[in-house]
Length: 259
Ligand SMILES: O=P(O)(O)O[C@H]1O[C@H](CO)[C@@H](O)[C@H]1O
Ligand SMILES: O=c1cc[nH]c(=O)[nH]1
Image 1 (cartoon, rainbow, N blue to C red):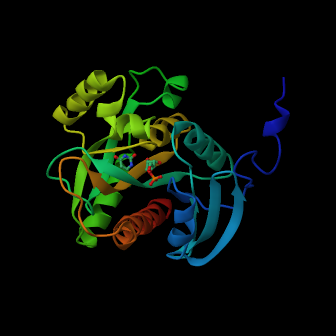
Image 2 (image 1 turned 30 degrees about the vertical axis):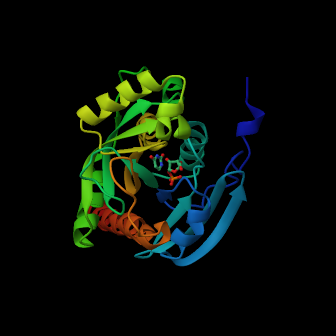
């Protein structure tokens, strides 16, 4: 039976049609971050806003690029990736905020996410848990090259993608504190670098759709250390500039391959 909701030219949630976005998409969770990111594009235009999904499209190196917010968590993120792919998106870079998972990682550092712990529910409705949430190697290498070029401090590694922000950041007051703390100790022992809420979904859904995805996170909290004194808006440029530079590198590489 046909799903009438899915046949519209404009996709149901993101309200975008083919041609509205470029092949390269930055994915912040926060809709408010889209306008800030779009200022880094040439000729940015707001092309849609619906629910948590805000989209701007512009160009970088003459190539059409876009930024779309995913909202918080797996369900809305899966919808964003699915519908963006339907209208022509090929490469996704999540640009998010996160908490540090290792003592040596401090507020203002970047985490370039190579894979994600599927500590959430959305991707279980796509793939059995044995399937890994892994970033695309070319996107990851572009993010690393971008952070190096910009002389930013970064950590490469695994992110914990979770569903409950307060269940995790306020673990000790939760009814399941013991289990939550034991699981967190396991992620830390395994070397996880950061904790956030969407990378696993971006990676698994992109894998299934045969699209490329990677992720860079700005560390905004560290439960091992006293808070730093740099306001988030001052360090946000590190996150955005790394995502923008990585897209430029990928555009250049893709042009060589296509030639
Ligand atoms: O800054 P964004 O991209 O929203 O990412 C992080 O911030 C939100 C929680 O505050 C979650 O979405 C988490 O993944
Ligand atoms: O610990 C943190 C900090 C920011 N965002 C998260 O999802 N977790």
